[in-house]
Image (cartoon, rainbow, N blue to C red; front, side, top):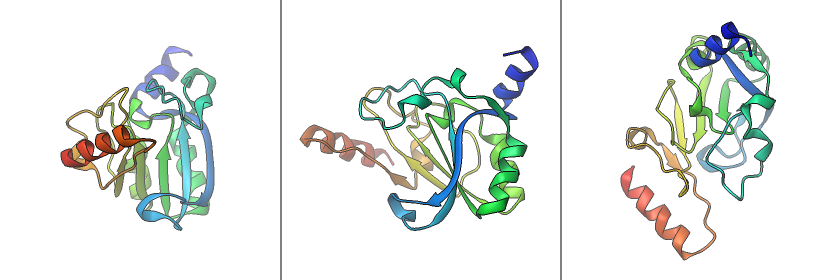
Length: 164
């Protein structure tokens, strides 16, 4: 990646775009809501149950101008869900500002393991034991999304809920 592109990625003007698609939200408080999903590449949390492991390596996903992504969103939906990978590995300030200027509701799904950025209408926090959310992220959570496989996972979920 050349220096100019890296600078744009560092500022969130470009993002490592894995995929983008229009669909119906299938989980959480907004189940059944039409939304445009933006899946950014890059994640070092390493959840063994992850169903999108191909998102982990950001270098596999081309840096894409946030302006172009927003133009695609505008064609299909009034709500966008930014997910990953781990979207907060990247600055979300630029893209959420563009989305909001276009009257598009902004939702995020994140582990919270990276610094908070962006302006969000809905913040879905999905804490992971392998890399806990930063303290600064908890107050922003509108909902928790937790993987529950056993009693220990349930206890972890309760501990995380107490921090919100």
